[in-house]
Amino acid sequence: MRKNIVAGNWKMNMTYQDGLALISEITNMVADEVTGSEVEIVVCPPFPLLHAIGKQLPQNDHFHLGAQNCHQKESGAYTGEVSAKMLQSVGVEYVILGHSERRQYFREDDELLSQKLKAALGAGLKPIFCVGESLETREADDTNEFIAKQLQNGLFHLSNEEFDQVVIAYEPIWAIGTGKTATSQQAQEVHAFIREQIARAYDAEAALNTTILYGGSANAQNAKELFSQPDVDGGLIGGASLKSRDFTEIIKSF
Ligand SMILES: O=C[C@H](O)COP(=O)(O)O
Image (cartoon, rainbow, N blue to C red; front, side):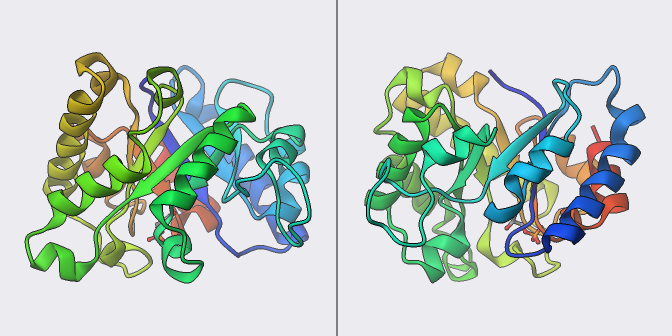
């Protein structure tokens, strides 16, 4: 079901104490703003903070807990890893998969991501699946081809029922953490293209019902313009999700 979502990806930031202080500020600031609105806020802290942050989230339809990664297996001898089932057991509802930082630094490829998607869905989690091109790809005018391939190889093997649970995040790599945001027109073009690809792989209804978020230097100043685009359903926010005032402003941008 298509929704307006603002997801905060804290990445590898925040100690336990800092995280609790941040979430308390966010929930206090946001409380009145979201009453009557339909926006979903997904908070994605690092693993050690998940349970405690989940406990601090108001028990209403607006706040949801997300993780930043999961392992592809359900359990076993995988030292240092965390399974989707473990995440689900501490109240996690969403999990970010295919983030460009994981593709780049941890060599996660389409094959592995396909397995992670299955594991997440099998544990009842909703994947936030990231796609996005490098600057080189954009400058070579290959953005659409690249995104189509990421969707085809990483995501479109899912059944209709599985795909129904997925949120897509378009995150141009050149815009992540660089302060260089895609223009609202650039974001809209790619989001519309992603919807076309979904319609081809599944059907028009699936395309219409999929939530597609934009990520990459989204902030309190540009969120309104980005979110006003017809195919942009919200944002996956990195840096600005670590500042309560900025994150609240972004949430208010719908
Ligand atoms: O997951 C979030 C994205 O990577 C965007 O990060 P950013 O808002 O710091 O550019």
